[in-house]
Image (tube, rainbow, N blue to C red; front, side, top):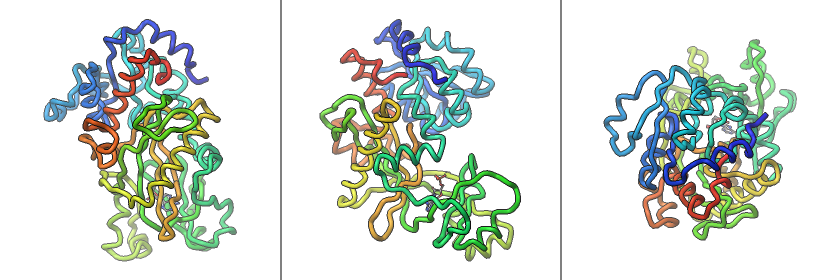
Length: 361
Ligand code: AMP
């Protein structure tokens, strides 16, 4: 059972809005989250696993005011009272959710959290992602149910494969059977979309903010766009074909090591805004709405069509190149605005209109 909104709202009724502490796990996008929270006037708390990360000393503006050191992620469940006493609002990031486990985060963590925690069930299951996005009218690569139906190249994705390890492309049924092996691992198969990858990052608000595009349930902004550097697939072509490399024992992987800032042709912006709006509207219908950052991860074909292969319903590390803002946020805000800072700004705004409950669950 998802931790109920009512339970969390009872906790924040006792919070002193002047003493809120923004907390997250020291990894992923934490530096911009702490820096942004401080810029918006909040106290910050870093949750560290094992020990305080030494390199944080090199980033004094982002180093949190205090640390809570735990032996493992699950230990945070025992620290709920301590954190609540400090008026903590947790910011879920990729490391936090992945290492703690989406289910534990959603069902057990009784600490006020920014955003709608119901989104975790929808983003962590590829079938539910499809129900949400395709159901809302967002274009996605077609699913291929059976190897005999492979007419064009497909990408085979193993369930829960970290960094896309072992994902492979097959151009026909024979190639599929040659590569699938006999591990019996669960997988999904979708049409391989040939084109250029883009990862536009949005921010959904339940409020009708006046520097945002309005949706049925609030408003949405485009914060930034990146492309991920994926090892080893991005560089494999330098050594020959992927097939040659496979024969030599190299397995292609899609492990993300960094992010590159990109912008889109202006003529392509209407469609991604349309997809963002559809994502928000459908989220409202399915699970009370999208609150905060999300990223539509996809490919543009040479027909200039965007296919979304995945959604992240929280801050993505692809926002990290934009700590001092992006070409898009420069057109939206009067101050340098990262997604980390935007989260704090949303909390600050919600407090100012006495609506904190709208953005916390
Ligand atoms: P995912 O785990 O779905 O994010 O996929 C990992 C990586 O595989 C992506 O970042 C892309 O590089 C690639 N990829 C995933 N789906 C597709 C697709 N349908 N067509 C082409 N490339 C894809």
